[in-house]
Each structure stands twice: as structure tokens, then as C-alpha cells.
Length: 343
Ligand SMILES: [Zn+2]
Image (cartoon, rainbow, N blue to C red; front, side):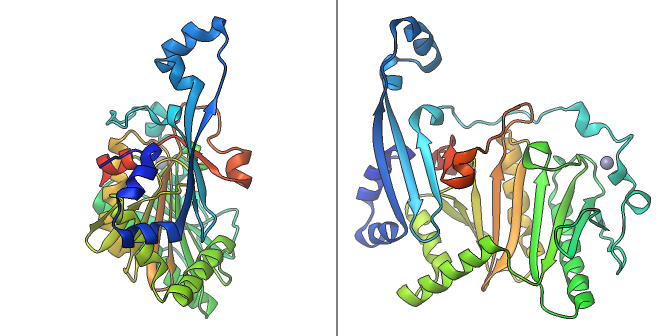
């Protein structure tokens, strides 16, 4: 079996007919070679940096697009070469600095929701001081360091989030849409170091989720099959998916950014997925991930979890540019290499 995104054409060719048809239904892709002329003066530097002139002068580029959602990722062979390997967990002094941390004293230093606070064994809720939904709150972890991730902690944060959602829905007196998110450390847009998740409950579906909902409904109508079940089958046929306690884990073929994982679950509440989510986060930390975004939301009969890596805490440049915002995503992690270490 080939297991590199740059050999996707060969992998697809080797699929059984039914799997190949399903792949082609979901994805279009293109593998092209771009050319460069390296001036003499640059040759030594190029050889030292990339190993050979040939590799730089003729670069393979893979573009893959989900035909239903429009999600598209671009992979350049040169960027994919770094091996994915375990690194030691970072020791940043800032992660231990609790002295001026308001979230270490949430009951006196954060606002409460009007319906009060919900306390878990490892977390407590707070109203978000600057909301972007009428119901927008925080699950503040008892543990300051967000990279101290334990299964019982994750289960408790999610249980507390579910209780908050019930309270919010009851307080509103109607059906609301649930969205849980975790921005971990500053690369991911978190403004506070202390571990915390955010929870929103809205009357209207978020636009991007509405689009995904429409895609799934139209797929069901057109093919009399579940979009998410078939999305899993495509990933499974390429060795990019596995199951953990009923949750289907996909190393996503069209990641928005690095190492994107897409989980499809039949759980009715998010805390039922605590085992899978904590395992994935533990694997992330083992791979040296320092900052990540996690989103959890129900969609139809499923709960979906999306998780991705936002890069090194020491990087000063952002990982998201105009191409990501308006066109397609540039990705440096090969999903096939990631699947080998993660699944
Ligand atoms: Zn703290």
C-alpha cells in the first residue's frame, strides 16, 4: 500500500471498484508538478536545506477538494517531508504562572450567568464577559495548565457543559442549538492561558453548520445514504479511519489546517465521547501539539467533533492567510502519515 498524499492517484487506482466510485463521488483531486529555475548562487543553500536541487526544481503539488462541501486542501511535497514523531511536552514557565490568573479564582474574579453557576468535580461555569451569543459562557477547569489533560477531567468538562446547555435552554424556554469549543493557548485564539472551554446556545444555527446540514440532507436525497456514514467509508477504504467505542475517527482528507481529525458519533450527549476525545488529545500532546482548536456540535442524528493543531507556541507568524480565509487551505502534514501514528 502506498501511503503518501502525493501518491493518492495510485492509492485510488488500487481501491475496489465500489470504494473508488464512492471516493470519486466525494472528491476531485489533482497532482501536478511545478517547475523552478534555481540560480547558481542559490544551489548550495538549496541542497543543504532540501537535500537536492531536483526536489526543489520539480515540486509535486496535490490539490484535493470535497465536491459537496467545497473544502479544499493543498499539499506541497517539500513541506510534507518532516517526519511526524513524538516530542517531549513543552515546559513553558507561562503555563505554570498562577499568581495573577483570574480563572484560578473564578467565583470572585469572573461573572456568573443569571441562572447561577454549574459546578462539576473538575470545573465551574462562568458567564463570558464579552459574549457573541445571548447564551455564551465558559467552562473553567480547576486545573490551570491547559496541557494537563486527563480523561476524568474531559468527561467532567463536557458533563458540566451539557448541564449548562440544559440550564440555558430552560432559561430561554425553547429549543436552542448547542456548540462547544475549546481554544487551547494563544496560537488558537485563546486570550487566557488557564484551561477553559466555551459554550454557546443559539436560536439560529451557525452559517457553516447550516451549510453542512444542507449538504447531508441533499446527499441523503440524492443517494439514499447517510453523508457521514459514506464520508467514513471513503476514509476507511484509504486507511484514514478507525473506531473507538462507537466513535468513528477520521484523519480528514481536506483539513482546514494541520492534523485535522473529524469524529462522527452517535452519542446523544458530548460527555459520552469523553474517552475518544481525551485519547485524541493525549495523542496530540504525544505528537508535540501545543495549541489546538476543538469544536463539538450535534448535526442530525450525530455529534461531530473537529480538532486541529495550530502550530508551535513560539511561532510569530500566523498559520492562516488569505488563501485559507478565502480560497483553500495550505497543509504541511500528510494525512496518511498522521493516520499511521494516530489511528
Ligand atoms: Zn489559572
